[in-house]
Amino acid sequence: MKKAEHKLKYVRRSSGKKRWRRKRKLGDRLGRVPEEERKDPEKLEAELEAEESERQRKQIHTERVRKIAGRFFQVVLAVLCVYTVFLIYGLMSTEYVYDENGNVVPKIVTVEEIENRDVYALLYRHYLQARGLYEDILRLDYRLSMDEESKLIATEYEELLDTVSSQTVAIDGLALDTKYGQFKTMLLEWVKTDAAVYLQNISAAILQNDSQKEEEALACRGQMYTDFLILSENMAVLGENVPGIDVSSLYEWSPENFISEVLEGVQDE
Image 1 (cartoon, helix red, strand yellow):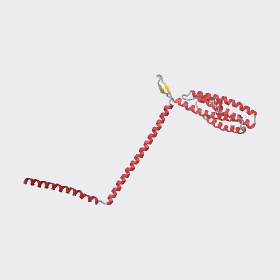
Image 2: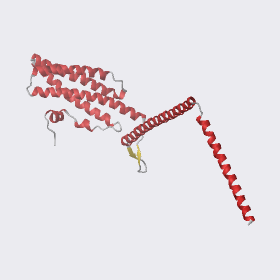
Image 3: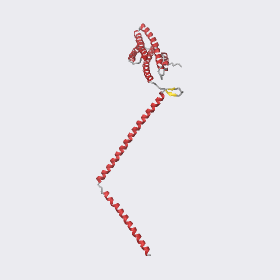
Image 4: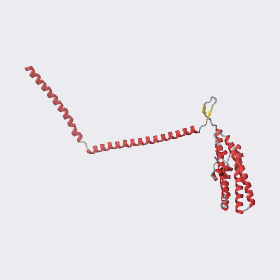
């Protein structure tokens, strides 16, 4: 019986010590709270402002990084689009031939061929301008044949002489190799001689009612027609010697086709 009481007292003592220690620790924790509450309000406000400033700075930096990344992505996307278009254009414009083994391979274009293409393109542009002048003359001739007001048409013939002057200066100023010199001479002579003389004579024949000028104009019309057909044929021959040039349109055009298809509105079946 005494042993049991002794154990019971021992347990009470030990449990009492533990409660005392827990109270002490809780007191220590509670004792630190007032110290934090006693901080200077100004310092606390300054710390809060500093934290807010830092937060805003990080937010601005993040937005700036996003904008830079977005612009970079747009530039990369644009470059990729241009590169894709360039590849597609290269595939479409590349000529292919068969090699010795029968395989299809891209055709290698030499520097000389590129230069020939550039020169031909330049000549072809001036040829088309001369053909446009010829088509304007054919329009006036067609109107004259339809008994329209001849005096008015005569002034329009004279106005085309301004076109003759500008084309003459442009063609004469071309700097070409010797092998293209003959074609340049033919083109220049057609514009400044055949077309110009015809326009002068036909206008004078109408305004002055001069039969002699009319006969000269008719002779010039025939010469102009013949020389332009020769000019078109030579243009086609030049194009056939330049790889990659389509000259079919040169053979399809003629004064007769222009009159029937454009002026009269009749197309051959």
